[in-house]
Image (cartoon, rainbow, N blue to C red; front, side, top):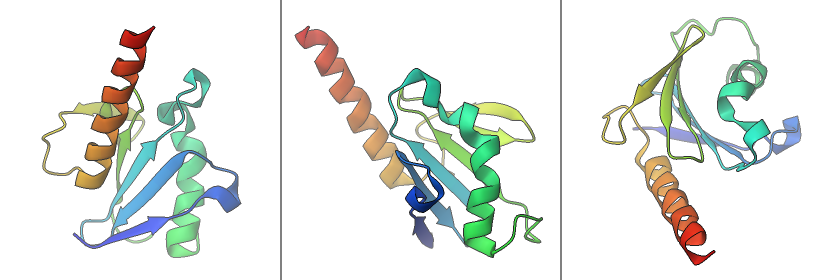
Length: 117
């Protein structure tokens, strides 16, 4: 896996980590925002053109089929395909291992925080 990490803060997108697998043409989006109104599924159509611009210097079709994988702070993982969100299991081979580990850590920490209350 050849991964390029993108910083989207200059585009006004904070709390979202972006990794692009250039060999498989797959964009991984890890949302670290725990606010309900900042769900990655609500933001995807807004940030797709920004990511394409950053990767390919334009927002038109880059000439390859880009796959989008979304990691939500609640532990859910989805493939975004033509407006549909398809749930994926954490063991799915298309996932970016570093994001799965971080997501698992976040969900475990939130469970601990709930139990401490």
